[in-house]
Length: 100
Image (cartoon, rainbow, N blue to C red; front, side, top):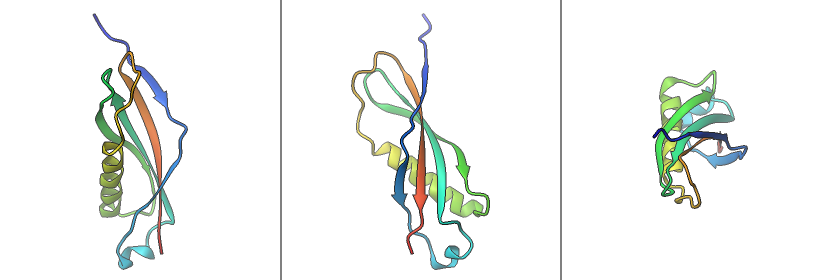
């Protein structure tokens, strides 16, 4: 039997501070949005964590990779979810703001 996969987009905007090297500050924007998708299993665990999109046109590939790793780390730290009767896919937009 094939299980249905319910796709839900979270409209929660999370702000996370993400430090960077001094040499990056002049070349990088004040904020970056990363869309992270993950699946909440029927037991409440979070699996299949991926970054879908990073909104940061002037960012270097190295900077994007650091932000991508931080976004994945944040989602891995989320607590287990309760009350799911079926697998549910979420897309969470995370906003990273630069600290000076």
